Amino acid sequence: MFIFRRKGGISALALADLIGCKCGKEKVPSNDFVINYGQKYDKANLNANVNFNKVEVQRILEENGIRVPKIFDKKTKILKKDYPILARRNYHSRGKDIVFIENEKDLNKNIDSLDCDYFVKYIEKRKEYRVHILGDYKSIVNVKIPKKDEEQDDIIWSHDKGWIHIEYLGEFREKLIKIAKDVLKVLKYDFGAVDIILGENGYFYVLEINSAPGLEDRKLQIYAEYFLNEEKKVKGIKEVKAPIKKEPAKQEEVIDQGIYAWKGNK
Image (cartoon, rainbow, N blue to C red; front, side, top):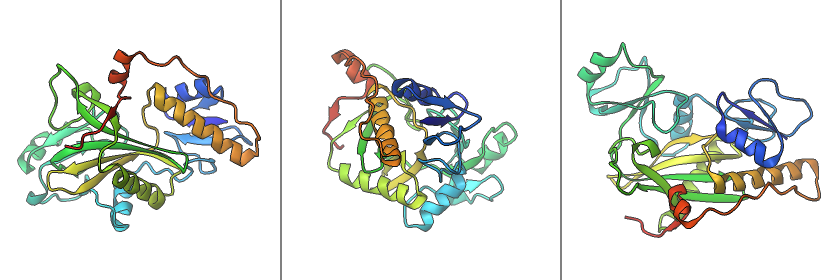
């Protein structure tokens, strides 16, 4: 097995360490089971169709009936009714790239200093979810909640801005899984983490799909098991090598990692 990673690629390296396989960001070995995880190799066994053009991906989703926030490339004239917007980069992590732009005056004032690849219409949200789909093997649904005793950013719901992921077992779980699976089907992905929000208007919107999501211990274990099972199918391996098991987290660590179950939906 070979995990084809992008620069940095901390989770890809952690997966390779857990599985005991090769991992790199440049040359892909021949005759190996290849997984695209932040990079694209057209002949990969998993996620061969990964697409890093965020504008194109959103267009494809919209054309296939999946609700997404309106997205604009840098050459598009943005109408007054489409503000506020968020400036974003194609490659980003934890919302560190996001710049909130209130109106056209604000955009013109900052246009020369903006380091972005595209703009997306800002949607006020009630909740934000991340849905991991690993083929038919496993689905994991998380919701973001405020960290205790920390100030939260109202626009950027990231770990650095006072938010954490926990497992979601509320009334929308199956609906969220269906939306995420529809996204993967349309894009012809094998796995990925789909970010979905519930807008203040009551509609669900797909923000993006992450083909190389950041993973913590529990999800690392599940992804490793999935990759090994997929390799087994392709190579006809009778016994799947189990990934290295780690010591279970202590209860006080579990909450920080977002592993405990949250049954609410408000």
